[in-house]
Length: 77
Image (cartoon, rainbow, N blue to C red; front, top):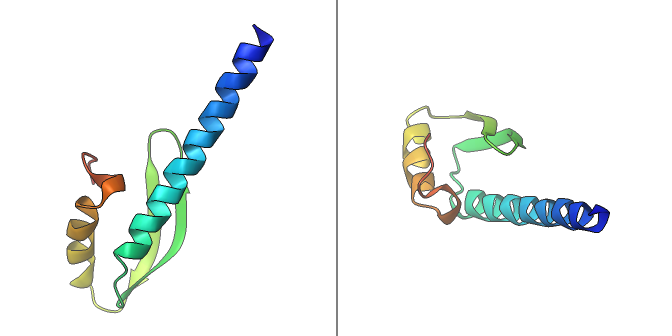
């Protein structure tokens, strides 16, 4: 039983790492020159992104583009 629990916890950590890697790749692939990120936090249920913009009109465009990225497909914004 103890080994099963340890294996399950290790698997969850690996999945988290893969999820974070996929997120970072998609954020990098959808970089906008007028935007920058200052904080990225995630847990099992939510992703919190903070940053700034030189041009506020760049934000909705960036969000729409992220919506088509692999990590974000099927997720609500």
